[in-house]
Amino acid sequence: MSLILVAIVCGFTALCYAELASMIPIAGSAYTYTYATMGELIAWIIGWDLILEYAVSNMAVSVGFAAHMEATFTWFGWHPALRWITPSYLPGGLTDLKGNVLYNPGWHFGFNIPAFLIVMVLTVVLVRGIRESAETNNIMVLLKIAAILAFVFVGMRFIHPTNYHPFIPEGWSGVLTGGSIIFFTYIGFDSVSTAAEEAKNPQRDIPFGIIATLIVCTVLYIAVAVVLTGLVPWRSLIDDAAPVVNSLSLLAGTTKSELLRWTELAVLFGAMMGMISSLLVFQLGQARVWFSMSRDGLLPKVFSNVHPRFRTPAVATWIAGFLVGIPGGILDIGTLSDLSNIGTLFAFVLVSLGVIILRYKQPERHRGFKAPGGLAAPILSVIFCILLMAGLPILTWLRFFAWLIIGMVVYWLYSRHRSEFSPRNANPALQAVTKQ
Image 1 (cartoon, rainbow, N blue to C red):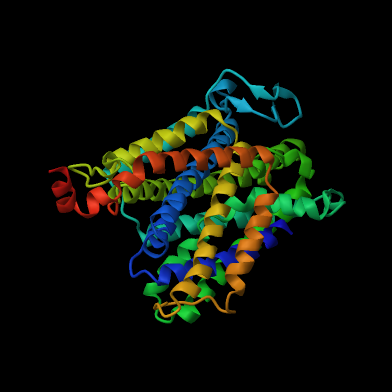
Image 2: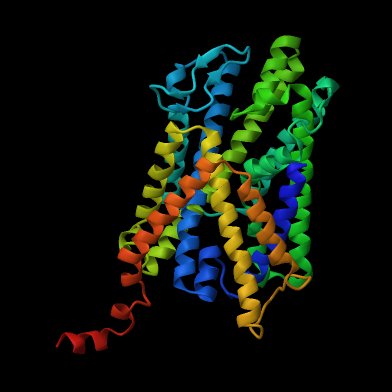
């Protein structure tokens, strides 16, 4: 139910994103579109929010990658020291597959080295330059889907129906909270909407692409969730960064099934390929946001420095790498996913509000695509996004507000005085006369 709720919210938001993107004849992010349509301050807020979204999302993915790497080591019989493959902060503690306590809740001495290393290796790749290949991307997508289908079809043979009772154990409030927590799994769906200007028939093709993407993702997510919660009690999945492979490993150990054991390896391979592609895309996107904001004068010019040989935004990429890699080695996946969710939902609220504002302020402006149903899509998007945000813990809200406050301080003390539209940059001749 949580997955269906999130898919509906994403559908409304994607329609808004597509309309905003179609108004600007260039490819870009929410920051680019907002800057061109709603001005510098709102663009700064969204850009600052996107930094949080991209960074924290990749921190969570890197922690997940590390958990799958640990499971791969275990599959091959290697057991490295636990302190170097787990986060330093574990608010829920850590137990093994048999329920034995490995770490009590709180801080412990250690660092998640695999999470840090994967981010830094990909940072080197991005600094040297990488060209997106549709063929390579398609292969990786097929590998991920194959791993998902392998788990679903093999796992359904070992389902225990008693695990489904009660079907909604936490009630409808639990459905809302679950949607708030899993929202970050849908991050990236909006990439379909950025192609509005390239579509032959955007009014038809964009909604079809968005809805088809969300339907396929939702069906796969639900299939995995149904099988997974049928294999093991749902409470055993809380704060688990690799629930599918750990569940397969537990069942393979109890049933002595070779089929489950080899399925676990296939799922591990597919999952890690998927996480590597996700890390690459969002680290690339994060560096581009920093580069764009620096080019516009909102961040120091050092972030828009281009490598003399590789012609990539090297400084922004390296800083983004360390900004993601170090916290990824320290924090757990639950803390990180909550921050990613609230940042993403807030950005979607602003994008949806932007569509409403521009419908009134610039109704005559050309739109390659217009969200159907009048103002229904943006209004429902705002309402549902705020509803999902309300399901997040209060501590997440406090951390998010602290991030926004820091951003506003940076803007008022630095960015607004150095942006390309500030008085000192907009009319240098007049400023020179004033100084005389």
